[in-house]
Image 1 (tube, rainbow, N blue to C red):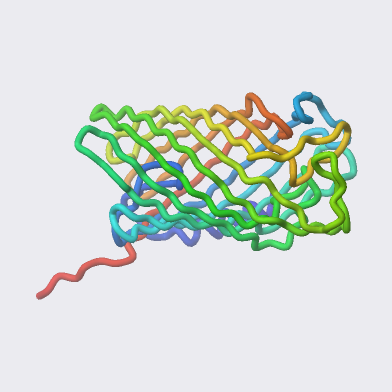
Image 2: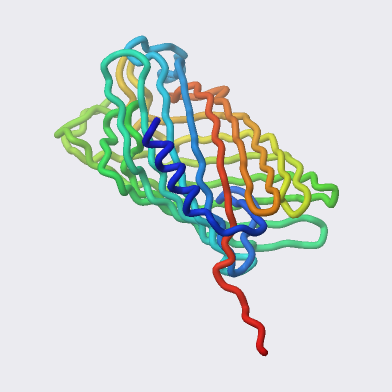
Length: 307
């Protein structure tokens, strides 16, 4: 926990410039204005005791409760009012409350997104496109699930976001994504997947899709925001966890989550909270997660007036 506090304090020390804040993420329709940037740091925690082994919901007393914690610095930059760049690099740690399995910790994957407003009309309708990619940075072990902090796969993501915003502040947002994932190498000469034995150290990680629906209220230039959401993630193909076996990167990991997101942004500092619960799944833990974050905006270029 001390390492997380150290990273959080470091991030907060970097945020020393005050002004109005427009916190934004790769799945929303909030944009940083041109020539501004928002630096954010969030602390995230997710825990589960029960999980789905294929469709069987069970516990593993050799693990007890699995907890994953992370500190996530993110930077969003307004290239134009309609085009934003977002980058993030998390520090992640896993630990189990029982048994002898050692958790992992370290820097995970560097992620980047381009978000662009494709269409917007005066009736409150808008359409947005997002292109994203991630590259593993940390030297972590992917073949040690559920203690691994990642899968060591390179990804490329395409996402469409549709939004309707009423003048009262009520809005509805829906998005759908397709995620391409590269092969990875594991520290073994052969492995079993799809009821077959593969005599190679290269593993094909299944591609994935995600979709979400968000209903919320936003007022005062997005300085006050509250929303409820449902999210669904599923792999395109993949196999299931074998009885009494560990998970493997080839597994079809599927989950449906519901949750709440809230944000409050006074003059020069903002914070947000997020709570989510997995209500149904396949080859995943029934996790309860929460996050808290702090945000600052940077005006990195200002026009000088001519005398």
